[in-house]
Length: 105
Image (spheres, rainbow, N blue to C red):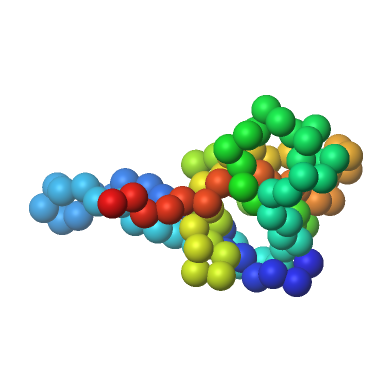
């Protein structure tokens, strides 16, 4: 767990004049194990998540639920969370599969 990541949540907020805009809120800043997609057996077994490009493993944060609506910021790159899984059902670690968001244009 040597990579610092920031988990953010986006939500709509109304300003004083009634206009809505998206606001990012930092849910947590933690250390994670990060693994890029490659031809290992682990990635071959996760073929249904073909658009996931990164795997992050983090310790469970008490009182915080990581959902698919959140995003991960790592090394100035943004990742969209595709799925989360409790490793071995022990509620100690979460495995998060994510896809890097790239600007189109």
